[in-house]
Length: 358
Image 1 (cartoon, helix red, strand yellow):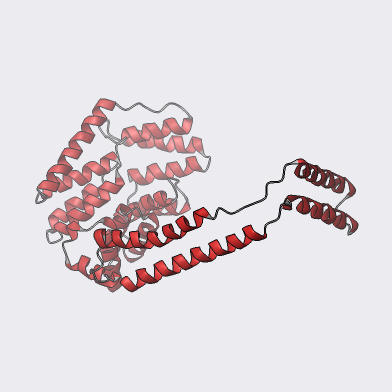
Image 2: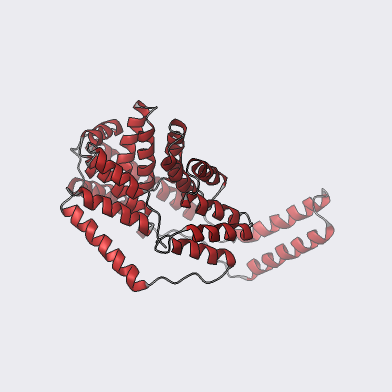
């Protein structure tokens, strides 16, 4: 390590010395003549040559010739300012160049960890997998699940979980890949198609594209009347310019929903957007109260995580609020904690599929 820094300092000083030597030579050989004049005279000759070769028309030649001549006259009238080098600054430059590696080395020795051995990715991955999954960040958990699904390529549930965690890790394309694989392995599971459709929308920047539409059509075939499928398929028609059909389908969905259903607000807001009307205004005080309650629950679970009912409530709350990143993160953490309790896992799955409230 010390040899590296010593060589770096020597090379930096040598490079600086070479630059200063060349600059000194240029300053010594510099003349009082302004090089701009020679440049513009050469431009005039080049313009005439292009015109003679037929590469420039006469109007273009006259215009370019006049501009170059104007610049030549301006440079001729300007007072000569020969370039000179400041010899006094050379020592300071060399000193700064030599001091920079020394300062960097000192900071590294004080703030860095020169004695820590390399940590290859494979070793870190093994440590994440052997450690407490609850302590992993979403990207780390996603790396572990990618390895697990590689070992179990026929495990649909593993790919479904990978899709959830990839979403929490802000990797929508990874989530789509994992959920597509899960849908291939378990084509009869409607929750996978719903998750895939939602992931496709995120990956498409919020638009219900052809991939998302195909996923929701499959969901509608497995669960006729599924509110999510009806809602997003109507959105797809609105995106395609078929606004009247989209509004009619959303109104039919609204008519089928109970009056107390929290999802009615999302449908009403969507109808207003499609029609170009003002969206229903939320109650700010109520929204702030809900956010405060959810934050309080999350803080309690961070202090006392052994609370399966609390985790289910937290996952459902994030799902209802539409905070998919926090929903997926809480879901992944809770599912890893209660992987050996099928009943809790089932409740978490249902909570994660809760519809967003608008």
